[in-house]
Length: 153
Image (cartoon, rainbow, N blue to C red):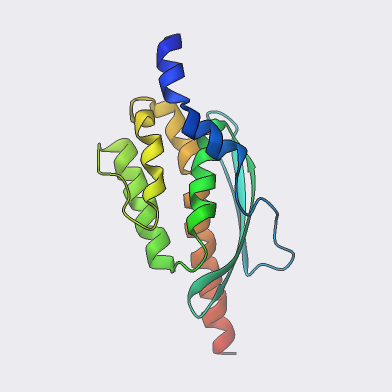
């Protein structure tokens, strides 16, 4: 990767997002916790999540990732409260398609991922970028399952 390519990839907006990750504190008593790790770069994201009436009511994350992974976690953090599992799953699928299949930018409420469009060409960065949304989707599924199981007890 040439130096000029790196400069383009790590734009000012990506660095701003990476420096200001919302909900960067783990929850004390979440309904679900999921840790995801990128084996290629070693980035990790741990997500804590609780649902209320099928929507994210509480969210926390611990992000140990490159600037791209941090920026993606910031987009997730800015948009996840109030979202349903289906919305989170749709955002995950759209981000994967944007990165891996030249798909469009994920739509609102997760439209902040457009800042990561330049990373399409850097396949070795995709796993880190996907960590936060994949962990959030998995945690939402686990929390939903736990909530549904509790209602039948």
